[in-house]
Image: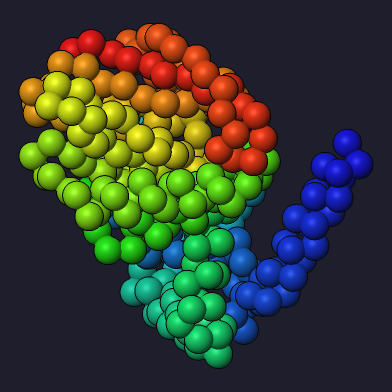
Length: 310
């Protein structure tokens, strides 16, 4: 609990820092509008005749407070209202010409301030900031904000330059953090990735990268063990997006591809500690067929071979 208290305090400190940094206290961006008023104006400017209910849900605002704010906007001539033709109980909102004129400098100043914040950092540091922002958003809201209902929170693509380095790096970092495996495991991953590139047969082998908004969320390989046997290798899903079906989706792609390529069986090598991965394998139809002990990662460890007949 003490550790969680420290983390909560760190989040509150970051919130105070960021609020001061973006000028959210008092008039927002030097305007007569508060931060909440500016957020409502932004939504009205970027939505086609939304309802008050829609705005309240998007911004998580108390409806009574939003109603008072909208009445103030209307008195000032910033918004207009109309009755929805499909449902006359609904009132549609829109910015007036005066409202658009009031919002325009806010929008322009917000963009200018962000550019001023990022520009001194340099390209590499800018990307680190953007990656951190994506990590925070993904951790608290895995589904993209503009995704249609029921859409998967990721897309799959084939590997491209740079992906092998990411795969080796994230395996090394995550497996050390979660299981205490040393750099010898990272070296094995590097050899697997190098062998895949050096001997790549696109008709019988594949690498899938799961990503969203340009951020890699996970990966998996299928390689040829023999003419009849495929091998599943290096399943990885980032901790912040586990539980979204990414691991199962990657394994399903391996199975689908292996069947189409004419393999009769898929095998994989894993460890008892990898409980989440083992659940995915079992749910997909793999069966444990063999156990062994090895010291490849610096200490005696049990390992398992699983297979699926196609």
